[in-house]
Length: 119
Image (cartoon, rainbow, N blue to C red; front, side, top):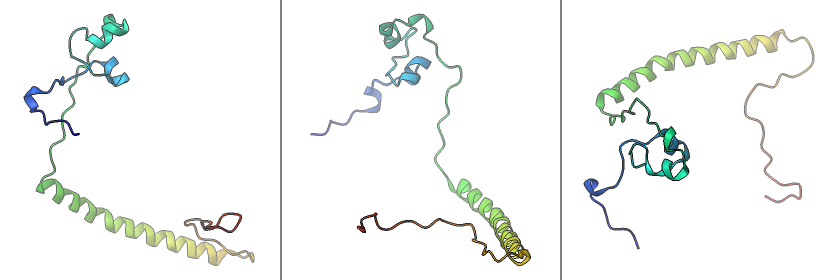
């Protein structure tokens, strides 16, 4: 049976955790020293990081437009790179005087059957 919903103000969750609780993924009570560090016998080394992580803002229209702008700037560069690499491959294949065939780089074939012939 699912748990009943808990109101945010009733949650017993600290807004910060000491470095030891963070590293061991334990629930920290944000006391100085915290209860988990005291239980482990490392209460004297219970320290809290100076910086507080800022939460990411939800994406809005301006960030979506920024992503579109970046994609539009990168697409021509990617196309130019693909064109130049294809030209380089053509030149390499044409300048090759040996009778060997040049295999273009790409995905390697995947074996579809096992050794006994089963799929």
